[in-house]
Image (cartoon, rainbow, N blue to C red):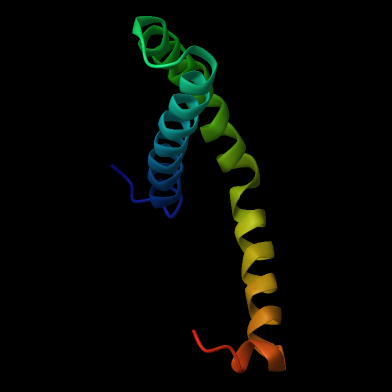
Length: 88
């Protein structure tokens, strides 16, 4: 098996998409159905729909969005007001 630089990205996309799909579909189906058996069944179905969509979007746009996030973070860190915050 050949080592690929993309493999860690695919694993990260798989894990992140799984977590986000599970968490968000759970919250939103709970809000729609309440805590009952319909919620459990719809949550499971929602995960199966959301996970491949989330993973595909992360594979397509994730690298670019991480670059944009890094650039925004650098800009915020350079702001003089940011250095004066008590939490920094």
